[in-house]
Length: 131
Image (cartoon, rainbow, N blue to C red; front, side, top):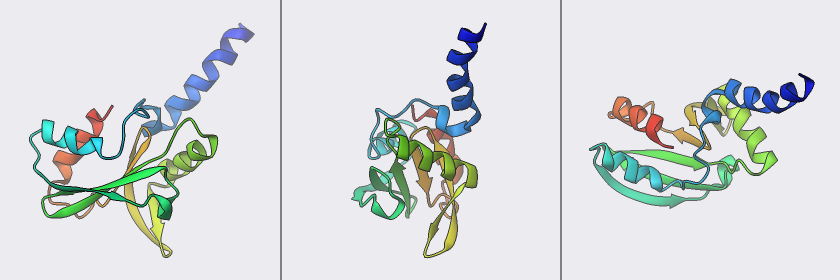
């Protein structure tokens, strides 16, 4: 019994983290644009972003409905990235110059700028498929 508990505990912890439990670490930030297009959402532009402001490993800006959505990837093979992602998932926000902005966490990715996007509901449905 003790052996089974030790193997199940990490799995249970992953499930409790919520959005982080999705296995999409193999994807890249810019891949999200392809998922949007598959769902019939028009993507005007995709550009690379510096991941540094939020200490992510990579980032892209995807323009949908005239508004940019930031897609930040945190590499779940790096312990420090996993811890950072867990904190963001708990707080459900990122800070720019001390000002909190709401985010959505799904697997290895943090989505920024959805709150002001006119296509928010459609984008949220696509985020659920991003795996």
